[in-house]
Length: 119
Image (tube, rainbow, N blue to C red; front, side, top):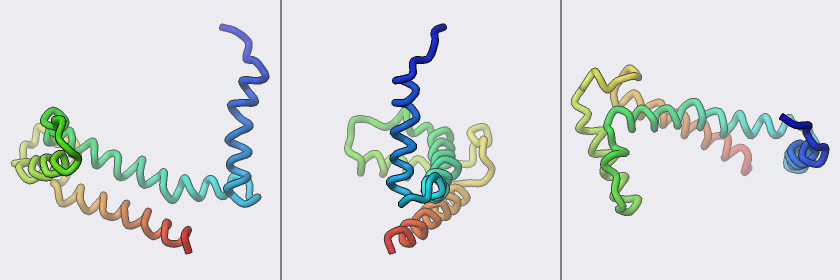
């Protein structure tokens, strides 16, 4: 191990602090916390787990090829529909409808915060 140099410590701490002060309008970290709670939390705790559950259940990541985004989206939807209730592939309870409701709720939550932020 070695000692931590002062320039690297300042470069690691100072830019995020200055950015939070600038973007929060002088409110310090309150604005940064509001942004992370409005967008980061639903993304991290709702949308990413839903995407991982869908990928795990359908094995769709193995099927995606070099096609375009629309082709890959069609393959994902088709794989979700064919998820024939194989209980060995289900680490998350519920079916595609449950995962859809969860992702729609998270998307709606982020959309309401976006509308409030832009207003």
